[in-house]
Amino acid sequence: MAVALPSFFTAIMIMSRLMAFIGISKNNDMCSKLQALDIAPKLSYDPSAIESASQDFGHIVKAVPQAVLLPSSPRDIASLVNFSYSNSVPFSIAARGNSHSVNGQAMAKNGVVIDMTSMKNGNGTGIRIASDGSYADVGGEQLWIDVLNATLGLGLTPVSWTDYLYLTIGGTLSNAGISGQTFRYGPQISNVYEIDVITGTADFVTCSPNNNSDLFYAALGGLGQFGIITRARIPLEPAPKRVKWVRMLYADFSDFTRDQELLISKNGRNDNKALNYLEGSLLLDQGSLDNWRSSFFPPQDQPKIISLITKFRIVYCLEIVKHYDGQTKTTVDKDLQQLLKGLSYLPGFMFEKDAKYEEFLNRVHSEELKLKAKGLWDVPHPWLNLFIPKSKISDFNDGVFKSIVLQRNITTGPVLVYPMNRKKWDDRMSAVIPDEEIFYTVGLLQSSAFDDWRTFEDQNKEILQFCEKAGIKVKQYLPHYTTKEGWVSHFGSKWSTFQKRKLQFDPKLLLSPGQRIFNNNQ
Ligand code: FAD
Image 1 (cartoon, rainbow, N blue to C red):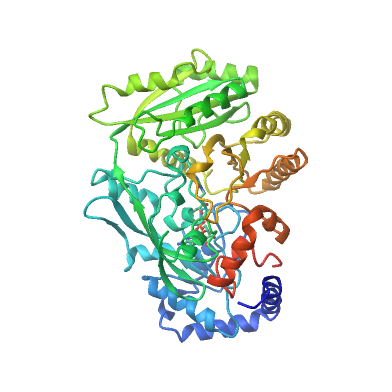
Image 2: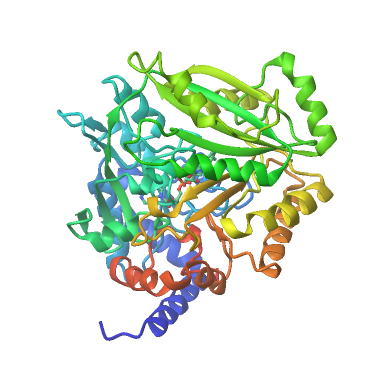
């Protein structure tokens, strides 16, 4: 390809500005052309469909599309993309999974939003489990909770999860899909054998590490920029029956992180003695002990935990899980004791639960239902998710948790802090992580009232500014930038590959415009 990348993208940007300028008449033109397509009956202009495609879980950003496609097969999706790609004035297209982004990533201003969930009632892949049980073929529109239920029915399970399961396969694979299993099994994008993708040129491509590998690595963690994932082949393993679920409290951050790092050092995929899950979180004075990450602490122990928080203002909570089944029932306690021997949690502050495997995995949902009942779920979510190199996590604790968060005293909702192993990620994929072997994820998963999310966004900005000044090279997870410079710095050494892949797989910049990577002028 002889076109120089920057001038190519500049030309496309000028074109898209021009398109925005001549907006209304072109939009009308686009709508009338869409009417002539075979998929016309599946395009909705219904105000409620448009309204719902203009919003997301964040309730902060709004972008109104022209239409919503309700596809019943990958062919419908390819048909729409092909129409836009071949049009003299192409329009943008966003796949919308379960719309649980928080910054408009699944929106398409003046374009068409594809409501992926409508494929569930159509002729997509659905959830098909291989006869030997080694993998499941799953439609990109499927929710992880449905994959869990379908596989458990056969005594099988995927191994890498997110904390919350009402997210689509396509949505989490476009980011990474992380949780307490990541330290051992890698993120969800490290647990995919193959995917089907409809690219921005409307090609339908099956790809894997051995077949069209460029597109495979581009799409995983690719923020929806290279194609729409319509199927993923996910490895399965025998499912455990139950879990031992433990939380331990710390007043000292270095004790807490030392123990977390010790525990994740035992991370062999087939090492039956290793933990299956490890996370951590902050207990704050202003927070509630039982936020949406699940009620856990026994009511009779809550007064002493509250006194501890009042005394230290921040208490660190290490959370681990060990799976077991009929065979390991008699040894699991001993194995767990062995793993926890010598840890420095506060004496008397270890709490244990025994739960069904699926109850543990679906733990956030019961809290979701409680918050929904109180009208506290569909509210603004000014979230900040960061990856922080291990060498700077103590500086982050001092400058952010102990200073900014305590001084501002506004943080409500879970604050997660847990480490992962870089070697479990594949650097060929688009997802971006820090350079060090161990890095932490920190998630400030805040809820706010409709009139005060800006106060939280200000705190998020202050945190990012502090990191910049203190030389803490953070990477955002579920990244959100409004300038090209922001994205270039986010991708770092991966930027030129990301750009080249965009030119190859979506040269007209049609896909997932809500990420604002190649169209941040709008
Ligand atoms: P959407 O928000 O609908 O889409 C996200 C992006 O992916 C958009 O750019 C969209 O265009 C694109 N996209 C959607 N479908 C496809 C497809 N089939 N092919 C290509 N691109 C597509 N994340 C974690 O990693 N771990 C967690 O534990 C976790 N917990 C969460 C808990 C809650 C309560 C919420 C709201 C979010 C959580 N997330 C977590 C974040 C979540 O993984 C991402 O926001 C994810 O993108 C949401 O999935 P979705 O199906 O709603 O995607």
